[in-house]
Image (cartoon, rainbow, N blue to C red; front, side, top):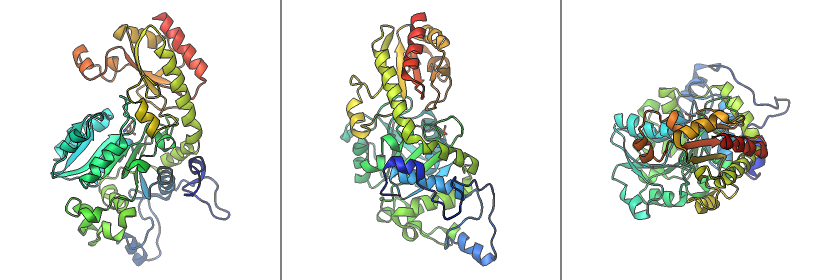
Length: 427
Ligand SMILES: *Cc1c(COP(=O)(O)O)cnc(C)c1O
């Protein structure tokens, strides 16, 4: 499928049925798989043969969908996880351990921020956060002897900052570590981080990839380019024999193309078990089949809503990387020329009360914590996700009380703009 355009890959990559086989991806709803001899099964346990034995590690339905996502991102291998949180944790923990250090953009999803700064800190993994806008000197200055990875989001949720992927990749590679990019918001239809130097790409497939608010899930894709064996001291997990797999050295046996995902499946899925259910993988694939048709509409609606809001007197500012007035317009044009996503944030001059009154008036946009759904949804962080914070803390966090985040769905943009207009008039 590699020679086909991304639109074709969205529809057909991953699963290629043979003669007389089902056209739709089969849901292999089975925890286990049958073998004729113990010897046959033993080969799987030694990683001598590829195949399935228990769905906590691998399942054919998941593998079809993971192969599609690998193809969309331009990677060599991929795996599905139970959630985006699990994908981020596994991608980092596959190469980090107690005593390791991560360099991360400070502009990332709140859940990932907590994962890295609180939960992984308890495991002895340190982090240095850098502004995505930092200079190359500042970025290089964040590295330590024990740094194992650099992390950032192509478009950050919810700040909507755009990552300068080449700048982060260059710094990572000059320190002998991979760049991990969370590409949830633009999806590979709009941005392919591997083409700009990223080594590992992660997703919350819960968002646009599923796109219908139906199933929580995640994915990890390996670009297959990072030379682990050239950095043996840094990545013992990939470069030293794994005693729990009869002394296999992943970096040697599976090469640059397969080592990362094989180790992540064989060790971390085996031990942590955060696997996606085949039912959810099937739903995810239904979303992927139309991803290339949906993303341009999300962008078109986001752009229309952002332009409308920017012209309104009740609005203090609009944050959308597709607006020429936006700080990240240039980076967005470079890394995602077809547009980024449908999420827009804006501040109402009337603060918290105006935001609450405005959102009550909306007829199409529902109040939800979700984003990236076919149906438009919105959120006022000050009265919901960030409600424990004082006015001062909200301002310091860059979340003023009048801030509204709107995730533009697939409705008609004229209806969305009209809905916003009548709600603004009522404030
Ligand atoms: C939602 C989200 C996550 C977490 O994904 P879940 O599927 O909710 O676990 C991680 N990163 C980004 C950018 C997200 O938007």
